[in-house]
Image (cartoon, rainbow, N blue to C red; front, side):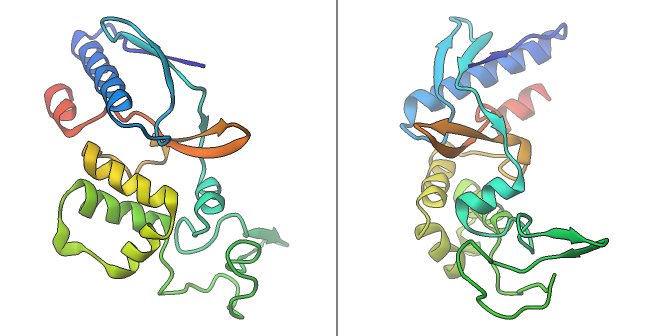
Length: 194
């Protein structure tokens, strides 16, 4: 379990933390989604909440979970040999030798996790439908986690989806699950307190 406190000697920062805890709890109660850490207990004033233990997530976790490279290349397939870093694409994940790429070559058509998070933040959370992209939509709709994440981002009007520290890894019945941390941080709270 994790104890999340809204405490600071600075009254404005403490109030920001309380508002973020309140909003995080309200989202948790409103949306029945596995994308948020479970909340077990809250204080009546929202000065603290107790939630499910969450481990830090790294790019490789997204790659293994979503079967897509995080950026231009798969991180988990990179190895270092005699000072040379090599990368062989999708070996062991979605395809086996899908082509005979040169090590570290970039596939210009490869959609990455980072691309999709930018897209979800722009189109789903931001409502900028003029940027809709059929290829991205196909990937999102064919991946249960990405699809649920995109719909949740839209419905909850999530912001700040591009920061790695806003995600974590939990163990749900022996299965890894990537969850969104600090979902209480909103544009309104940012404008009001920061």
